[in-house]
Each structure stands twice: as structure tokens, then as C-alpha cells.
Amino acid sequence: MVTYDLKGKEKKSKKYYETARKISKRILENIIITGEDFLADYMRYIEEHKIESLRSREEYSIEILLIGVLMLEYMDNGRAFMNKSVHLYVSLNGLRKASEKFRPFIDKLRGILINRVLTKKKKGINNYTLYDFYLVIRWMEAVGDFEEELKRIKGWYLFLEAEDNEFVEEFLIYSEEIAKWMCSICENKLGNYLSNVDSYLNSYKEAHKGKEDIIFCGRSKNQYYLNMIGAEIMNDVYKESFVNCKEKRVYLPSCMRKDKETCKAIKINEGFKCMKCNKRCSVRTITLIGESKGFDSRIIPHQTSLFDIRGKNEIGVVGIACILNLLAGGWKAIRMEFIPQCVVLEYCGCAHHWCEKDVPAEINYSVFREKFIKISK
Image (cartoon, rainbow, N blue to C red; front, side, top):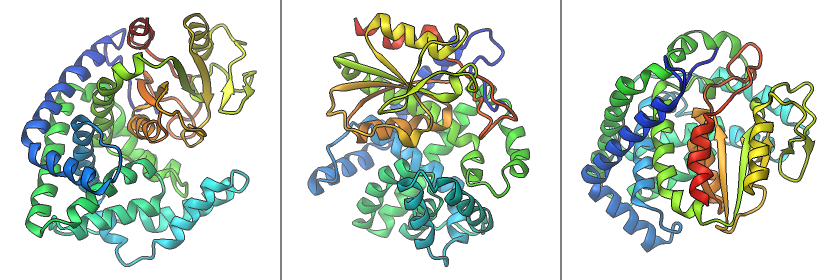
């Protein structure tokens, strides 16, 4: 099932981008004002403890939303997993990452464990304590789908660990409330672009029963909204730096290929190179644009294979992805010292996660050209 469509009821997705840009600015402005003290305290903590190279207030604002959304969605999962050992799951996740050869077998085993244990929930009262936050982090580590999200929120956990209980409670309540507010606005303004998400979430479990992607595919609308808003904010933060990069690359998902069975792309060091074999293929179109504008295009079969080398903050990358992969891809790019921008797929179409059979995905070429080509001159 195609869960989202950026065109909505329009012929083009221009209105989506205009709306997402407008409300992301409104949401960001609110967080920077209402969360000013939290942001200032956390940024001071990062500098004093040398946690990382200091990022912008805008980026840490996204992380406050992230924490709120995760606590809202997974607190019951964390509570149910409370007395289970996390080590087996973390070990399997590590083996999966290290061994491509054994990945199919490991994924089958992970699928069994995830379905039997990690999908369980236990209702309870949210006390907004550091321990509640810890339980969610621990559960996310076991799942293995949240590598980049964990890297972002663990800094906040260390920060909160140094504060008193009253401060922790105040912060966690704030993060949840601001996340609820964001989702309420998005439901009103962007909900029509997610018209099939509810139907999908009501029926997906049967198709993904026993599979390791059941938690990823079961992410709620709130996580779609978080990625839609967060991607707009992150694009704005890095736009100028991206323009100034001498080298630029575009990473395309394999679901954009017109026909994966007849695709003649060849393996290269990082992903696959398009050989322009199909005139109706979106990958070919973007590859030709790249050849005329001086950027390199690569097909990436899975996000985990991105960025095998560091970019040294000299290479700008445009990641094309479906909504649920936007923020994680951007965070990984930054961690690997690339300068990121993103373009959202018009709809999701891969058979692995969403549809019964592959539906070749597309992008808004006007947005692609305007955002990443014209400004680069």
C-alpha cells in the first residue's frame, strides 16, 4: 500500500513543500522561544563536556521533538521490556551490521525475537523520570532500527543525568507537549498527504508477522510528521554550507529504478552507478542532470551502506528518501562529515516494506532543480 503521496489531491507536490516549509518555521520559532532555557543549558553542557562539535539551536530543537515523539510512542514498549536482557539483541544487531553474508539468517532470527518480545506493550503511568527515558533508550537499542536516533538522544540522557528530578520531569513533560502540539498542527495541515497511513497501520501486521521490519513499518503518523518537519529545518540549516561545497553527490534509493529486473547499473565502491539503460527511468533522468551540472549520482540499495568514507565537511550530499528515513539519513551524513540536503520521494513504493509489488518512486524535479541546482551556480 502506498502510505503517503506528496501530491495529495493536486497534480503536483508544490503545495506540500510550501505548506511544510511554512509550518516548520512556525514550529521551530515556538521551540526556540519556549524551550530557550533547555536549549541553552544543553548546548552549554555539550561545550563543557566536549560531547561533540556544537551544532545549531535549530538542530537541537529537532531533537527535543524527537524525544517527545519517542516517549509518546514507545514508553509502553520500554516498560514491557524492562526485565529482559538487552545484550542478545545488541549482539545480533552488531553481527548483522558486520556480516552481509549472514544478514538474511540474522534477520530471520531478529524477526522472531522482535515479534515475540519487542512488540509487546505494558500500560502504566508515565512518571517523567530519567528511568522512563532509560527504558525507552534500552528498548530502542534492542530493536536495532534506531542507530542515528540513539546517537542523538543519548547526549540528552547524559545531560539530564546531571540534573535533579524536578528538572528532568519538567523537560520530559515539555518535550511531550511540544511534540503533541507539532503533531496536532501537522495533522491539520499535512494529514491529507498521509491519507493511507491509518489503513496501512490497521492491516500491516499480518504481512510483516515474523519479519524484522515490523517495528519500522509500524511507526505512527507522529514519526512521519517529525521527519517532514525536521527535514525542512535541517535543509535550511545546511543550505548555505551545501551551496559552498565544491563537490556534490546525489544518493538515490534503488526503489527509483524503473525496472530492477532489467536494470544494468554496475557496482562501484559506494553503491551502484546508473548506466542510463531505460529512458523512462527516474534514476537515468537525475544522472543526466548530474552530468550536465557537475555532480555525481549513485544508487544506494540500503541506507546502511551509505557513507563508507568521511566527507571531511567538503562534500555536499543530496539524499533522496521516503519520509521515515529523512532524519536518520541526514544525521548519518553529518556524523560522517558530509553536508546534507534532502528531497522527499513523492510516495513510497518498495515491495520490501510497503507495497505488494514494487512501484517505481519519483521526485518533484522542479524542487530538485531549484533547491540543489540553481542555487549552486
